[in-house]
Image (cartoon, rainbow, N blue to C red; front, side, top):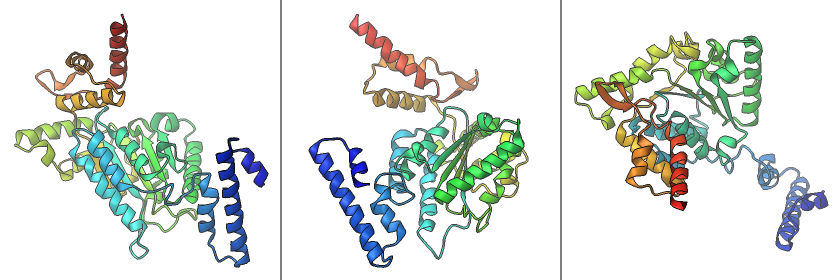
Length: 349
């Protein structure tokens, strides 16, 4: 076994030496545990052996780094004051994970709503990156896509597969993250299949979901959020002073009659803990997005490059009120690489 393991190391002396020493330590720990009659717990053994080579559901691989999330949102999310509350929401969830006397009573369920391009998927990726060492690539993070995974064909089969997949995932790691994207395109009744997993149950099919996190993402409520924000502006409320209660009732009412949320028990039974509105972006926020996109590619753009990037952005809600970017920052992800490539070619010529 030792020989087979070390053959996997690169055949340079320092790495080979490290491999041999690591294996000797591993064998020593296991031997000591056996000699001590199980004095070491299996989880402790895993941390020093298996979990050094593969992802495990422990603090090293699932660090729940709330400070990292806070920093990411502050540096990479623009024009979304309410989204910062995700830090407090997830901090409270983490605190309960570590408190045996006041543990989580149900799975944490967060629903993200708003127009395309305002940062919903971006925020869910930041959450995964903060909570899991491997981010979205973690085997404890599962992403479902509305229409792709849950159109209305063969629905019973898809529901049965969904339940089996989630049970297996949360068995492996009770702190799993499950993301349902594009719920506006999902067949109604799918979410009712997972209702027991979101409710106040000790276990479902023998699996405890209370420490898991579910994130729903949809465009549902986007126009209503924009309309309500305009009303608040007219009332003299500043963007950074809006609150959840300004939008949650509108989102709930709208969602209950649309897409995968249509007449769903997740809404009717109040199983969604937080409805997070993503506000429509204004020109200043889109400019921030553009700058961040350029800088992520180590490019410091000229005013002309910024102007060209923003030329593809249209504003609404109508021609008389060109206040909000209709597609947020979405079109910039393709426009900016094109501008960089074009300027590079022109410079070389």
